[in-house]
Length: 226
View 1 (cartoon, one colour):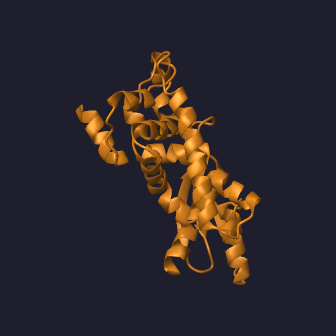
View 2: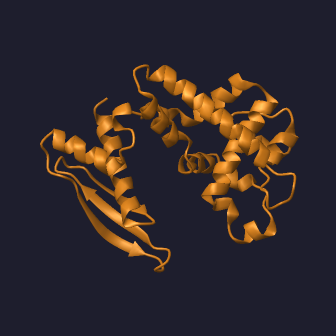
């Protein structure tokens, strides 16, 4: 196995017996016919099934509608691209010249597809049990944070409800810095609560930065309550 694959194997905690599978999983369609689209299709189906099974067992009193929304939050493109970035999959992607020039190795949709293709490749290289272990280990921290009561609610809404339930004032959000060109700005937000929590967060829009700040405060609150 070449050094790059050894490094990747450590990152994903899985060593492929058939190296051709992992090479295909990391090959974008811009390279040619022998790409990862079929593996992505397979991985997407396995991911949905494994997460559905886990949610069914974990939340026995949860309705079908809520489980569907919980599953959607775990298998959406944004989540998968974040997982792909955590594993540095972009460093191993094979892209055509056009995608390389446009920074395809950073594109969320390409990274999410590659993550699903890796799932498909692991399944073909091993078995469903091993594949399930990989998926649940990658999503473990996100699954632990799931709450049927909060399903579909964004972090700002959850923080607001938390403070209102304790008869606390609503948090304040202030833009403290805006950088970048008009078409690609980055917003830096400061969020404060009456309970003394203050965090700063950045995002490609004011809304995203505010959501990120609220999410961080909720994480602090959850950590403090344990």
